[in-house]
Length: 153
Image 1 (tube, rainbow, N blue to C red):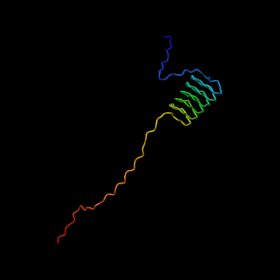
Image 2: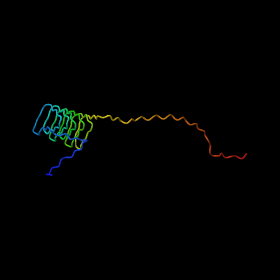
Image 3: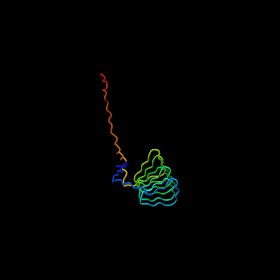
Image 4: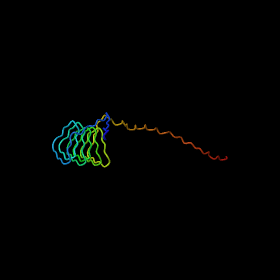
């Protein structure tokens, strides 16, 4: 009514509220553990283990092993990442291995590492072609189709 509408969210995709912010002028070394969402815009070294979502801002530099639900990366990350969904935006850069359920790489994003996706999806069964049985050589009979000229005796 007074200029602001509430954001509509679907019940299937709950949004984790950002409760902790590391500002752009902060340099922190240590461990982060949280049940809520975290945003990093500064420099962080250590480990991150959160239940909520993690947002790494464009100017952020993170050297850490990360465990979080959904992770959005616009800055630089060096370390292994484990999570449900990882999105690396066009300014995002990641050096490390990913263990995830879903991955989104925007055009211009950089990823150097291995990606392991969870899930019980098995590759399709592809059977090698069976060798054909060797064909038996056909017996040939020579047949002369032109009549022989007859001589008059």
